[in-house]
Image (tube, rainbow, N blue to C red; front, side, top):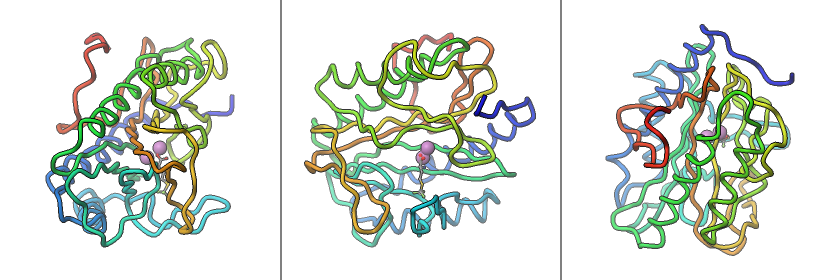
Length: 269
Ligand code: MF3
Ligand code: CO
Ligand code: CO
């Protein structure tokens, strides 16, 4: 078994870190308006994480093998940017869509979550992409229970998104999370039911599908981090950190401002 199983006290640590990450998104929500720069959003988030939450912004200086250290405290991916967008001084404009991805470390535990924000008034197409990507994430989450397999999650996301004419990014995936930012297993957002690792209670991992309006191919920008769609079509992403429980799942990255689950997710979940 390559992945870590969290004990009840580990899970308490995860719950706290994950709630804090989600609360940073709550805090940022009112600031995501036309004219604000993503650098300003980074400053607001950094201050809150460090001064108020007494936590650590995990992205800052994060440097996996082969990467230059990430220079900011949050990721902001605008329009055709898929993920890992670096905050900068450019103002957001009416109609932009932006993914804000927050990872905090509290007492050694990581919480990782992202949401889409529509700046001002978005187009119907942009709003639809964001909403379908949210549902795609939840299609995956709804599969989580002991005995299910990682392939079930990927398959649910892929068939849902592709069935609506969207494409699923392959190069980046969800991941185990805990005392490390990125642990095993990899959680692919495509796949075949009944394949890959079996889920067992105490696993914690993220589900974070990246869905493109156009083709699935990606390109990396020269900054060493930002990933964009090759065809420059819009891309959206949502992310939760989840725990496998004895009879299903618990979404750990919830807070007062989290959007409710889609209707297809039974309230028993
Ligand atoms: N939060 C991202 C994820 O969901 C990872 C960002 S790595 C960073 O896995 F260095 F860009 F922050
Ligand atoms: Co993640
Ligand atoms: Co993330």
